[in-house]
Length: 241
Image (cartoon, rainbow, N blue to C red; front, side, top):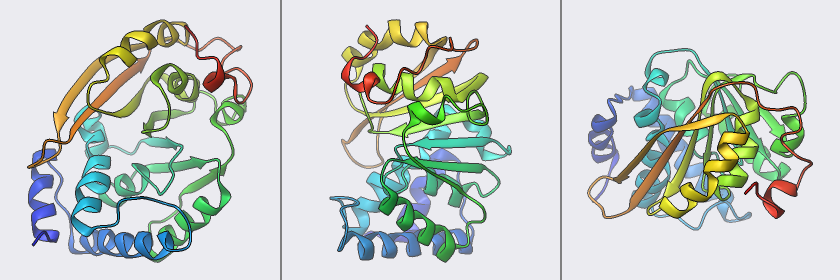
């Protein structure tokens, strides 16, 4: 029977140690996820063990690419956060981060506000809309230390969402399933045009499973040209090639 003890044990490989409060927050997050999922489509995964491993642990693997999050106060934006992955697990494990969650569906943000309130996670900025629009606004453009996104779009499109939002010297962490080699090759030109560079590709399996994951780490080398991102919808319809 999978329980919190095993989840805690698996987190040791990420150098994450949870307090009693944090353990309770993960338990409460799971309950709210299942409860809200009955009335709106948040996730197809609802089994306790699967949520712990495939959503919570998986979200925390950001640490593999960005160990600074363990101790530093960094600004993080989660693009297309959905049910809050990876942003909410990161905020639970690393309460010092300044977190922004962006999603195109208001009802998902309503759920995430409920999670934030019930778990007493402190101030989290909730943005309703599209990354292309927010990246044109001076208060968000090239503002964040870290941009993260999990299973949102192909890498060429995703790069145009993320890279304009991150500071020069900051990083974008793109979380993918296994076997992303072809996608990475197809995105290299877009990443370069947007003034990023792939600094690391990390392939691994989730603990005690054959579930493969790929984390693509992109470093922002200089300011993104003002013409990017293009207008909302275009990066997905016509990815940079």
